[in-house]
Image 1 (cartoon, protein in one colour):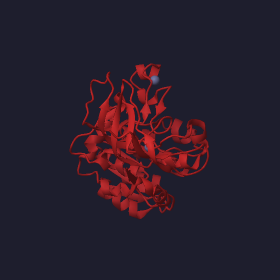
Image 2: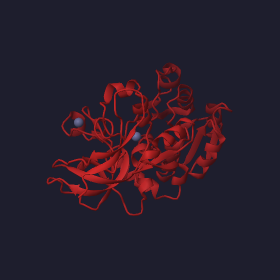
Image 3: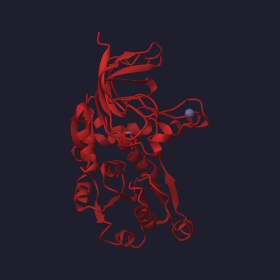
Image 4: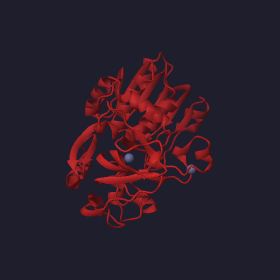
Length: 348
Ligand SMILES: [Zn+2]
Ligand SMILES: [Zn+2]
């Protein structure tokens, strides 16, 4: 039996890429863990933070370790206490590894666990031939979902979670930002029964794809007064809900102003700096609710997303960026930095 594997390693605490090792030990599992033979793993914005070693990484990550968390693999071994997973099962992984003990875990919110650990961030991940993870953090993948689609549960799940929080059924919903997560949110709005889906972005090409993936109406927010256009479309009222994927100050304010009084703004995108808003005029006087979502509900969002993936609205080819082998990681990152859209998938 093979005892070593190939994998990418973030070797030290500081800026710099991931290095291919060919003689890493295959992880040894504990009694509540499973060992996965990795099929493929997508590259996340988080991985780029770790690569560049920004403030976020400095606070959380200890090198050396194996990054990568948006993955799908087949279980090849299971610890003795694992009862509801079996060898041969194909699973994807939840990055948020909850403690199971804190107030949030015990009250049905393990995705915002106070002691959360992060797969592929605070412990070894899946840019390798094999990876281990606690069995209760795996999600079985139906046969009609491809490996590449299965890698999308984790990264795009936050967008689907945003749609859940916006409670879109029967409503007019604005999705702001049409990158892969926004496009997924657009399809999810359709599947969850929104009455009208409006999408906005700064790039017309992305808006064309948003229309293919379920948007009824699109606006280039760089070329129009978005709140004004949304009001025109809704008889002067405004959208029932808006979902911000961008995390950009201007876009968040535009979304807030596009929502009707007593409507809801859901924030998914992470602003890189503090955001200024006119709470008095835009939120308080108009009784608008504002909600943040983090990660995915475990496992409600995953089940919802499986439904979105199988719908005719969801078009994986528009969400994928490129396919690479582990040793081609530098090229994958070069393409991400040069602005090639979509998720990059790494094959071990
Ligand atoms: Zn991720
Ligand atoms: Zn907890």
